[in-house]
Image (cartoon, rainbow over all chains, first blue to last red; front, top):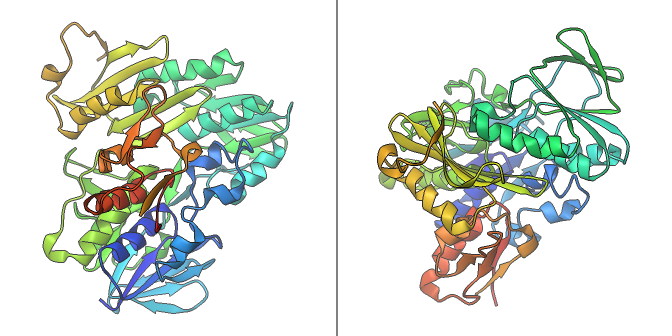
Length: 394
Length: 65
């Protein structure tokens, strides 16, 4: 191949570019990113960066020397605007065109927003720096959405001395992902610290001075952070011929079309291990899928299905939450180690008759890896979960 | 080649231990990684490079020295 183009210069795109070089690809390698910055890491945005423990330089994904050593044709600060599959060309927003013999799409996601002006979101370095400037002691922050991102930001804001209100449409935050009991336990950490958590409320718009709820009530705020999920960045692919449907639709090899692969938050692919199509917005998946897509593009005769165990972590106050697998849509949760109430436990998730996920808080790494193995092998639930362990929900 | 781990960046994911168990391990108390073998033999370098690439905190470097 003469030129491989990677669109998206964050974790997935960088992993793909690095892997192409490691695997011996010596042709032109173009890496396109819409942000003007060298590839940087996003998980710390809602953690150390927001807490002002780290400055932006610490987020660089690679040292400048390591990046230079990749010999990239690096195009930063310019977004991809279109794709012409037939003549294998990517169109950029500045009007230029980049032909490719192989393409990896890693354009990620952007935050969903609410109607109205003036709210923060948390996706880019700029977003995080803008929000942290405003999080001074005594300020009232309203966080819309108590998912993992919103909960992390709430925890940081609380530590910085802000007054925090957390608004969540579901009866129990994170329940759709981790189950009702586990969601309630994780939520307690916020309640104990005086975060004003209000569940079952729907925010319809951001207004001057706060947010408006569906029932008309106005909740005042000095700052509003909207953390209600993300949308895959696929608009530039509209009409390209690629299948789009909540992400770039790929097969189990992460291939979207001939010589076109997708990786990271934007990619929807069939994960054979779980027998389902998924799109995963986890930092670890970005790297793993970028690597897998690069290898499959480079070695069409030795392609491997991408069938990872998804992994994510979240830091909230003194809790480190770690989860393996595909927890969404689970049928049952059982605590197999530790104690829920003490927030030191491993919860195992069942989907059908198999172990589909494990979530741990405050447990030693060897214990967590043991349960990860049950997920990785799709262990039979009955043989994995001892009879005396009481299932916590049906 | 020497392995460098930026410990404060480590998020205790354990990805490095799975990629290169001869070179990395995790502390029991908090899961933070540590290096078992700072100058791993040549036959383990591919595993280390995998760990560098897969580390979700970009906390590992393999330096030429």
